Image (cartoon, rainbow, N blue to C red; front, side, top):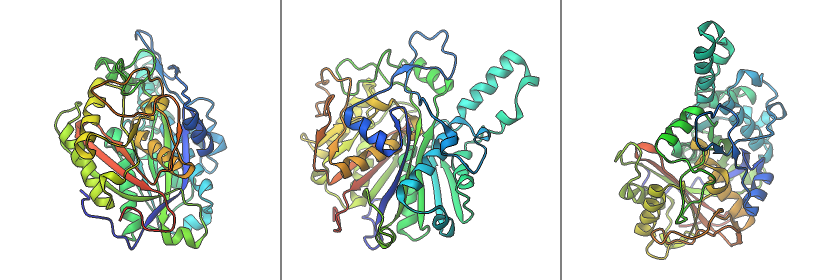
Length: 415
């Protein structure tokens, strides 16, 4: 896994951001919602929740795929692929790069996911149980391939000189996709990359977390003394990456620079986070980025709102940053846990925080757990001059990922 500083000769920057989320579609809506500390918690409606004692989630509402998916029939796509494809179109538009220019270049599409198209599998199972195999729709069955989260983007943008991949390292997968794309750009294997993560709310994952007693009855309150778990969410976050040379040559707006990343797999336990594995991943990312712990201004935490995650993550942060760490926030308090999209949406949150110079809050906060003992920027965003921001992503099986972002001001950052 990356442990040496990235080659400073080919710097990688973010020039386009695409968001589909429960708190807004498009980067402007998303950024405004983060600054305002909004959430859109409501009872889950995309599957039958009969029999569950509490059923709140963070669904994407008022989403009109036909606004963003124009070249292919969106009815061919599952819910998660619609999110990823729309977010990619939004990212490309936001970047100012023409579709024709992207098509002429070498492109990488890398999308992380936890569930792939499990929402479609839910429907197939329901049809089989209630209507018999003869009622199953072939069109629905064709939607279930997880690979479509990436390939549908290539089809929609009419790309042929392109490599596509769907990365399924669960809830850290968005950061994995960003790290994969960062390497492709800085080593010259691609000219542009569309990367991030996408997932849709599904019965399988909701039920799994419910049986683990990890679903909160009302809202997600990370780092709070009385936190009770996650809320499942959905959406997609796609970033357009290119080299600094490319971006400056075409006069592109630069949100932030990708400084480096770290990956680790401690394989400690199927579901329980491991303090040492998390700390090791942060150390690898800092080394790869050439950043010292004291230079980090903000940590976007995995911050699920479960007892185990928040305690383990904050302990690992103190192992790495000492007893006075930077501010630590959880965007899941607003977005819910969007699974494979989580660290990608958080990466976009980090990018706009750097550009617009504010720190998103951790909402629903009443009293910080003394065992966490961090400044989580409770309930209200604050203005801040951020230069380096760290984005954490952890997953079942000990699949850990961290990406560091820096403000681009024409100078080398963190070296």
